[in-house]
Length: 153
View 1 (cartoon, rainbow, N blue to C red):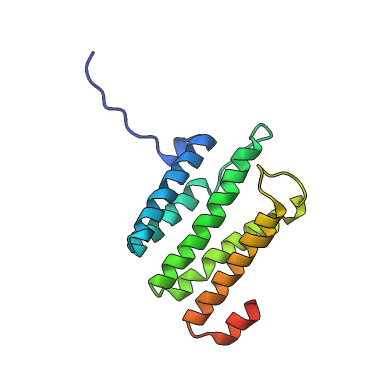
View 2: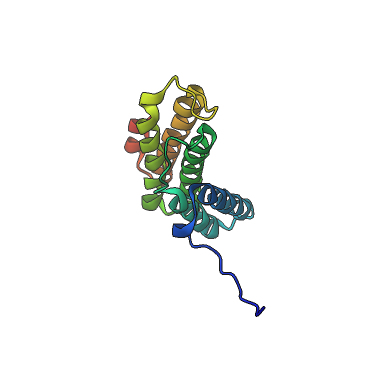
């Protein structure tokens, strides 16, 4: 048989599980670059991780674990991208990331008290919500917009 190279699937060809797995790999790579202070590359990878799962369509057969993975990836990558932007002094760009995390948390608020893949309300609406607000405030502080920073808190 003649050798035929198999190309990698594009994101649009991946199913929901493959997208989540790919997104987790991108997030892991981004974290490695962040730790080595390669903030621009980390920012790009966090953005790609979110873009990979942004329009994931799941159905009633999707597990709670899958749903929890999606939520955790979007929130963590969004907040981590904000931190990269702060390090790069891209304050205008930074402000959008924690807002994205907060939009997702607001959408999930009506499901509070329900088990979303083991994610507790304290984790979702306490820890992650507070972290997003703190990052927004920190971004304003770094950008010398002190009134905005205080208003957020």
